Length: 275
Image 1: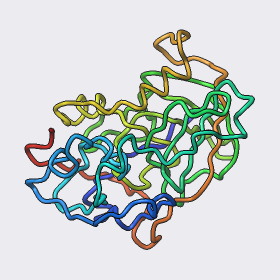
Image 2: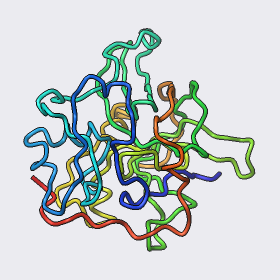
Image 3: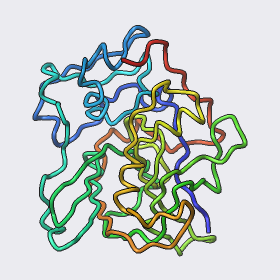
Image 4: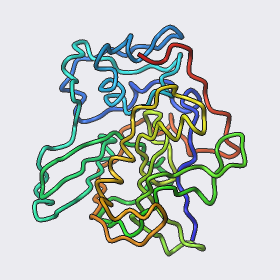
């Protein structure tokens, strides 16, 4: 069985402006499109709400790179505790746990009996590899999963898919293709071969040497919420919550192409990245 999905993308190579992505909740905020310089840091741009600023742009610390344009609210305090997901999802009101992925917002919501308990930005698949919208279910978990197809850029080391939650197997293709929710890098735009990626900055620090202070760990949080005390530390069959995927990313199609092999070396963030 092939565990595909996340070949990471070099942010500066794939999409120069995150302002070109249009989310349904953008109209709620007045924002400027700001091109980052080598002197900029998340803290310099967003102050104490720098994590909310990254969430607002669906990006992580490592992809906060000079030359990229991002959305900066004119009143940064308005994105405190930023969350575009509905606080209550009626289709989940009878479900102890349900995961809703809105590809239009590029965000995920975790629900308990319909009530949102937490949300997180995600990286979704590029158009050619994106799964159809619909209902799926987690059937396997693995806290230390790895890709069987793709390496870390510039190495022979398998690409990590830590805190993996498998929610679909495509049995129509030779070898069967599996799709996971898992930790990866978040460049702020569709970037995977169909998996759903969440913040995993501890993995990035281990594999890429940055960020120096890994703080964004939504993949671990979701995994622990799903598995609870039943984690064995290894791959195991697991009947987990339903996963509902809806929406389509709103990005000019000519600006984003499928990830190509061989991958390029990861982009290097400028010094002074951290608050």
